[in-house]
Length: 156
Image (cartoon, rainbow, N blue to C red; front, side, top):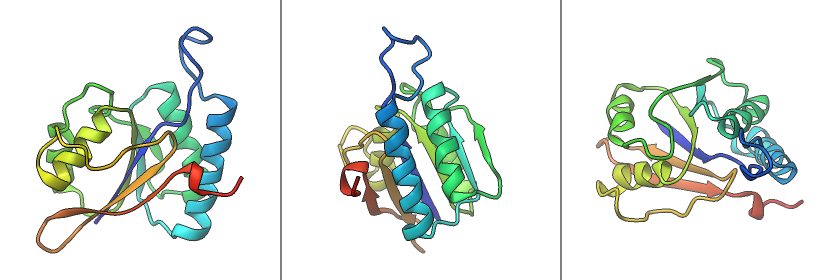
């Protein structure tokens, strides 16, 4: 099984819009990432789940245009910034197919740390807005980081 963790793209500040939709830069970076994922990464994601916050929803919807998950895009609980990683640790044990989670820091950072080294206080990866961290689960039920892509790595 593969798990793809995505920090939402760059959003507008709350002072400009309380809902914090994606900024123009955030939209453009997510479109670039979606293009890369659809043409180069050959992902087979069954569904994309997001936190329900507008910036995560917009990021998920743009990514879905490129990835075309068979199960679509939907909101899921347990993906907000301060949610505990244990919620998804339990859910992932029941997952058999590849999924993508679009959420926020510090939750995503704590989740990947808990999966990879069983210590959510250790920093395993540094997330970037609209970046994707790919994790793989091996035959011994151990998670590892397979690859990371950020908008900064892609040509503009």
